[in-house]
View 1 (cartoon, rainbow, N blue to C red):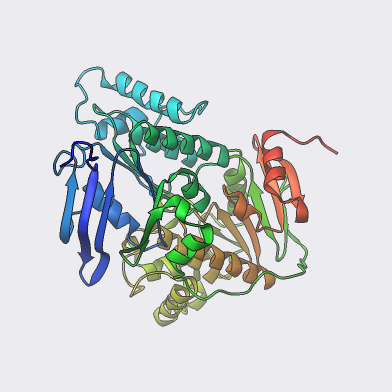
View 2 (view 1 turned 90 degrees about the vertical axis):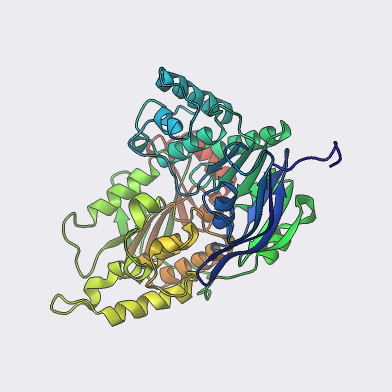
Length: 474
């Protein structure tokens, strides 16, 4: 080997991973070296999570080779993973969570020392974060939990991180905090570290990656320097794999009577898509929770529910992990088809199969476990559950986390189509692009509504202005 040749931190050669007849990865060859920031993109189910688990040691290849700079141990090579589905133990503190992956921690005084390590990492990545590291993780907001997980990914753990895999790391972060992370990634790679950056937010990929790898159906279909891709070229390379698109943008929107009116000032009319925006953690999710609980029974569900909920934190509030895809979809319609207390299994299966095709859930059988799906496809199941329900009001708490760009466009069209039929949507999102799909937007700051925007007023500039400074009362 030439002494000037850079030794890859990890190199995969014709790596395959099969789960029975399913070829999750089908001959991947890729290497990652110091200074690399690789943008890994592809639709949900393209094989990204499987590739990550091969690199971090969570899975072994069915065929092919995986080699690290110092042998075969990814941990010794400094490989770290920050997962899309938050993997922190909710009943432990940040220091205790770090201890789980810190083999070199001394037996005495570790709690204080590891707490300082996590805090130093948080301070480095997210200046002014305000996150407590001495409380149990489940007392933190989802954005704070994601920040802690990212900080633990970059923390020393007895040896420095060399390759950090970030799977949808900004999905629960507002724009300002996300920009702090992107700046840290650029500096980390400039200092000789490496990052594999997985995101459906293509602007972020273009912002930090020096090379983009596109996966489709378990294969690398494109790999080029970032500058060689245009946004449209990248979308074209990914291909479109979702179901049929419904509806479309209507030229003139007409709404019915007011169907939601809260003491806080949040309102919505029949057939309207209302967005909730502002910096994460400023009361949007709490406002939706109060609305949902005020319109739903705490002990008994009726045949005609007033409201249905789409969770963004699908592991905590959304999927039923022990059940099949079919049961996760059909639970919202069990009473509609039931007679004499007996479920209409044939009808439920038909509805689940219909939504599988309409929204593009990537599975060969809806009777498969819901955990057999990728994170984005699990989110599609939650959308299917809500839209299959007869509820006239749909409450959505940042529901597009980890969903690919093609599916997002299809879901936008579905929501518009359902709104045209008279359904009302209240939609909290941390993505300004999504909020701009709405008919009216309420911006929150410090738990209160700071602005109400409609029509041409709904712009990123106006939303940011209202997010950082309360508007004077008229």
